[in-house]
Length: 358
Image 1 (cartoon, helix red, strand yellow):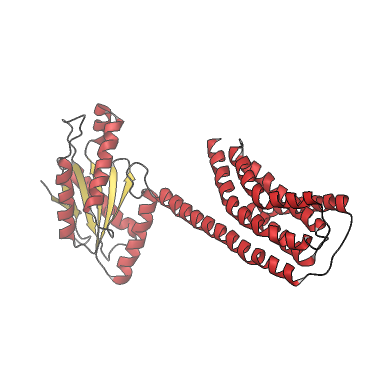
Image 2 (cartoon, rainbow, N blue to C red):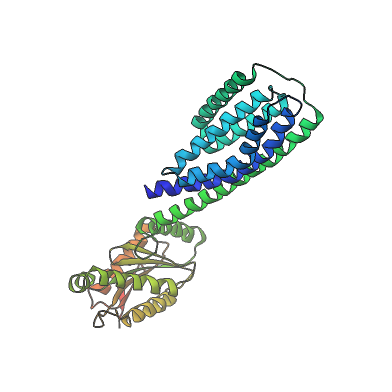
């Protein structure tokens, strides 16, 4: 309910400025057409109200309504009704009629698409019938020079105002789309890439390494005994450990080194251009930093990491081979004492992995 009201208020704010500009300069377009005719004073009072008071009243009505979006759509139909009425009052002066009705129709299409276009056309027809009922069925097919000049601001300024509103809306939609795209690729707890997004990047990096014969290192990182941490201290403390690891990864890696949460307590990193020796040093730095972490409510908690590394090799058939070697290296680290970095050797080597222990 509150979200719908917020969207309705945003809609009313977008309509407000174009309505102020459109009806304000529309006053002069209609006034120039009415001036040669013998019209009662109440028509001029109504035209003044419609041109300069109604835009602000309509905004107050919509923003104070329980359902602002619906109220604003009704206001747009009132605008169309008045447009048809002024067309009939001006005895269908060609330029004035086309200017007023076309601008209002454009506004309806921009605000509500096909449905509001149809409803707006019906409202315009109702306004025409009301004007005919009061002043009779009359036509004036001559447009004076003064009327041409009076319509020019409407034909130039109003489309500009409406265009600016549409442009700002398009910018906001693009920003929301980018934000949604980021959310769909990001792990909500850690702010790192999620499993699917990281796997996509792994396949992309594998293809780049193959095409350009470049080097890169893949790291899989696991928090030792993470289930015990959750069972002993609770999931809030466990989540804090995951967030601390992600924080350290973000500070340690540069913009080209891509980290993700692979699942549960397992993290993954692609280190492009880094030779294996430097990748080892970087992961050692991460392991040592996490050992220094102390949770403020659980000072006795110690966090250690097991890390498996695999450098890119031409022998890999696909990215999954690369990932499998890193996983084997991680398995070696976890089953040889944990709190260590293990490095997968070349596939031509008789051994699957060697250990770099501490």
